[in-house]
Image (cartoon, rainbow, N blue to C red):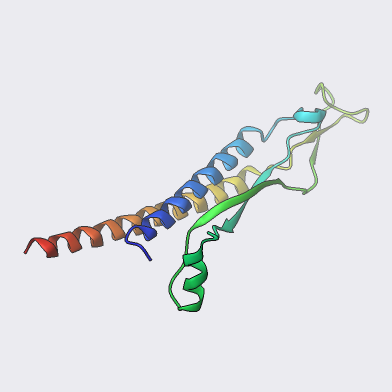
Length: 146
C-alpha cells in the first residue's frame, strides 16, 4: 500500500458522495415536475455504489500476500426508482386526467432530506479521515527533521 492510497480512497468517496448529493438535489428540484422526458412525470433517481476494483498485477498479488488492496468506491450507475407515481386530485391542472387526477413524481421530500443528511455525514466523515491521514503524514515528516 502506497503512502497516498488512503487519501485516494477518501477522495473517491468524496467524489461519490458529491454525486449522490447532486442526484438528491435533482430529485428535490423535480418533486413537482409533471412533464419530464417522454411526457411522463419525473422519476426519482438513485445512486448505486460499487467498489473500485483496480485490475493490476500488484492488486492480484496483494490478495495472496494478505496485504491491503483497497482502492475506494465508484458510482456504477444511476438508476430510476420504480415506486409508483403519486396521484393528486386537482381538476384545474393542465395535466389532469378526465377524472381530475394529476400524476406526480415518486419523489418524497422528507425521504430526500434524510438521504441528503446521510450523504453530508458520509462526506464529512471522509474529510475527517483524510485530515487524519494528512496529520499522520505531517508527523512522519517532523520525525525526519530531528
